[in-house]
Amino acid sequence: MIEDLLMYTLIVPAVASLVTLALNKPLGRWNGIIAFLTSLLSIGVFGVAVWRIFAGGVSYYEKIYEWFIVDGAMLRFGFRADGLSAPIGLTVAVVSALTALYTVKLMKDSENMGIFFSLYQLFFMGMIGLVLSTNLIEFFLFFELSVVASWALINEWGTGARERVALKYFLFTEAGALCFLAGIVATNGYLQTLDIFDIPAKIAQLNPSLSTLIAIVSAMLIGFFVKMAIVPLHSWLPDTYVEAPTPITALLSSAMSGLAAYAIVRIVFMYTPTLKYIATAMIVLAVITMIYGAVNALGQDDFKRLLAYSSISQMGYILLGLGAAAFAISFGASDLAAIGATGSMFHYISHATGKAILFLLVGVFALQAGTRSISKMGGLAGKMPFTAVLMFVGFFALMGVPFTNGFISEWMIFTGAIGSASMAGAIYKITLGVVAIIATALTFAYALWSIRRMLFGQTPPQLNGVKEASIALLAPLLVFALLTVFLGLYPAVFTDEIKSAILGLIASSP
Image 1 (cartoon, rainbow, N blue to C red):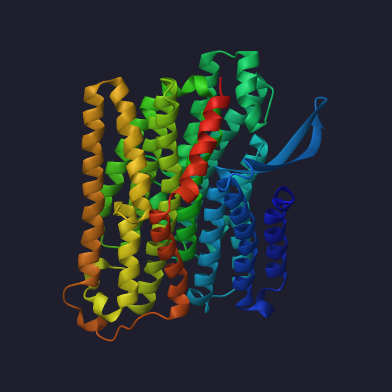
Image 2: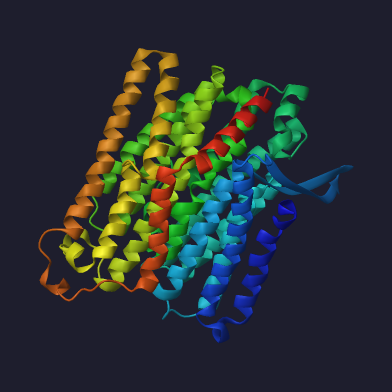
């Protein structure tokens, strides 16, 4: 039954998108409620899948459809919810649903919200389709849908130089998409398949040259690194996150960008013979990205821009776990590889809940205090206590404080990274240990600096009349906060099945 419902997680938002587009003005605020309800279907489907897989009743749900014939061969597409895709899909659905509710209140006076939520649901559809895809072309098409929909949302409802920023975002992500497409075309040419799960068997059967496989994987990684904003392919992100509508920034940071990391596990790890040759580059770029993002975050006065650079740094954390996993796989250390990769995928989830809180708080501060400038705020904990607690929880997740999901994910990432480095020699182990300390210290620094300046100290005269935001605006953030703590206390709900899926992926590879 679940496998039959996977298609409806895409059909329903597609239909709802048309409805909100056609009934733009008559529906009013119901446009946002419809977007929320369409996400609820996905939450239900993925929630059941996660529970059934966690309980051990089934390893995955899959539905394959025949598409069309190419050169006498039937091209198929399908949808698969397993221990890897189901938790990620559930995260995307929860972030999209709660952000839609938040948007109804925050942007209630904006125009053409029917068109906004029509594009919003296409954006959501693209992300869900990407997560469920079993075919490389299918994956690419859903990737493109999410890019085009998010570009339109930034271009029309962004702030400042939104058209220039949206164009830069589009050009960067399309360049990355073309690199990914080049890898897809080469895969079809050399491996004679577009089915993601057939890649290991085709490599073993056809035995293409190692240089060919490395070229394919390199092209794909460039595309994914652009989407993750890995240094030096990051320059599109700060302005995009700052000028995009706050709810869309939350979706981009919490849901979309990290899906490129999911793609690395789902697709790149299928090309097992290449992993030993790309692992070191992944780790080096990850370390640079972690430090670069955190250092730049420290220098920002605009709270939204600070969070943008923080997002770059956090993508570095995720890449570090994946690079360490690739390194461990090349040494045959499957369990160690699974720890690092599981940590990265769980960090996608912890970053989603924590960063969603913080980016949505940008809108709260702008609405209640009339500013995003850290230097123009102060003493707000006394005037907005509920908001202050939410801000603490969001930053605690990024800092990896115990009892938050961020603590679990960062512990697993650093365990995998330092364990993998130890196989290369003591100097590498020590180096990564130092990097872990520096990155964590910098994250604590920009987080505590923001908390100190914004929530404590003397309140500027112009903010004496500031009051707490409405419960309608803060309720979605409260849910994110509860999830952050729940998954910090009970991480096995996701980590066990993610780890099992990754171990299965490693075992199936040549």
